[in-house]
Image (tube, rainbow over all chains, first blue to last red; front, side, top):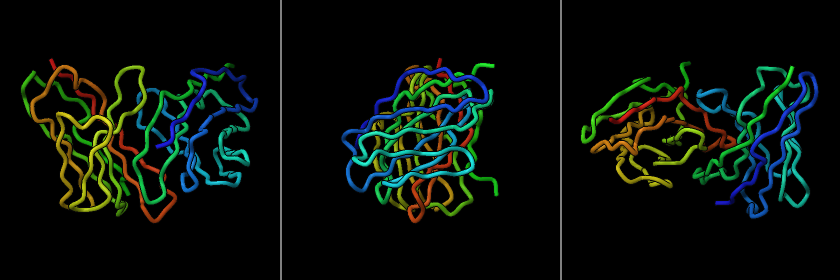
Amino acid sequence: DAKTTQPPSMDCAEGRAANLPCNHSTISGNEYVYWYRQIHSQGPQYIIHGLKNNETNEMASLIITEDRKSSTLILPHATLRDTAVYYCIVGGGSYQKVTFGTGTKLQVIP
Amino acid sequence: NAGVTQTPKFQVLKTGQSMTLQCAQDMNHEYMSWYRQDPGMGLRLIHYSVGAGITDQGEVPNGYNVSRSTTEDFPLRLLSAAPSQTSVYFCASSSLAGGGEQYFGPGTRLTVT
C-alpha cells in the first residue's frame, strides 16, 4: 500500500481558503486518493476522492498533480467547524485495505 | 437509514476478560473493517472483510477475532483483554461497486484495567 506524507499541523484564518497538501509518491496506477476528516474523537468523515482528475463537491475540491505524486485538498471558505484532523490516504478500488497516517491538524482561527 | 452503528459506546474490562464489539450497517455494503485509534495517533486497520464469509488481517490483528456471517454485521471479538488494547475502536463500511469511500461508525471507547 502506498504511504502518504502530510504536515502535522496548519492554521487558517476563518473565511479564507485552506489548502492541505499531501505527498503520495509511491501511488500505483489504480489507487485512488481519499480525504477524510475527524472532528474531536468522532468517527472519520469522508470528504472527497479522486483518481487522476481534479474533483469538486459541496465540501471541498481535490487537486491531483499530473504525475499523481501529490494532491491538495482545498476548503474554499474555512469556518470554525472545519477545525479537525484531515487524513489523506491512498488505496481503494477493488482492494480496500488502506492505511491511515496521523493526518494534518487544521486549526481555523477567528 | 442508520448508516454504521456500533455498540457499546463505552466499555471497561478487566485484564483477561473477553468481549465482542458489535458493528452493523444498513447500506448493503460488501466491505467492512475495524480500526483502532490510540491517543494522538491515526487509525490502524485490525481486520477487514470484503463479503460474507470472507475476512482478512490488517496491520494489527493480534488479540482480535472477526467473522462475517451476514452482509450487515461484522463483530470484533477480544479474546483475552490486555491494557494495551485500551483504545477507541471504529467500524467502517463501503461499497466495492462505488468509489471506495468508507463510512465510519461513532466508535467504541474501550478501557482495559
